[in-house]
Image (cartoon, rainbow, N blue to C red; front, top):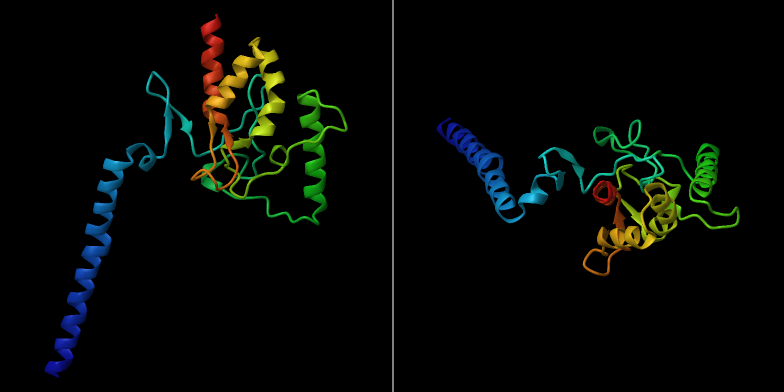
Length: 198
């Protein structure tokens, strides 16, 4: 019987020690390192304006539909760009609903950006990402939107193109994926540029 109680006591003590280390000490150490070494990223890569108001995150897309803004990828997250409901549409390549939605998006994109019926449309302009919250658009997508945005804001196309280049993130580690344009900080910079002209 003493051996049984000794085993139980050992199991309980081991559980307590592991709980303290794994649920207390380890998370605190990781939190401390993250705050010290990667403060901005550890806190959500937030975009804060000059008044201290949080405008969003560099990591999450937001919906923009006005012609003076660059438009992000379509979103199927909740009612669109809902970070609490991140998801794709779950529609497969044989889905008629998906095919109809893409056809409508292609037609809308061509109309908004003054493209001809035969002009190709970038895939990221008409398909949602897996999360529905992708903050980036492709370089080609941004390039096709520059004339519309520049015209709507009364800005020089070269000025808008320079801002696009400024907010283009390179491929991860220089080789993984393609460069992408981060839409939210780009649109915020466009607002600042437009305000400076007034």
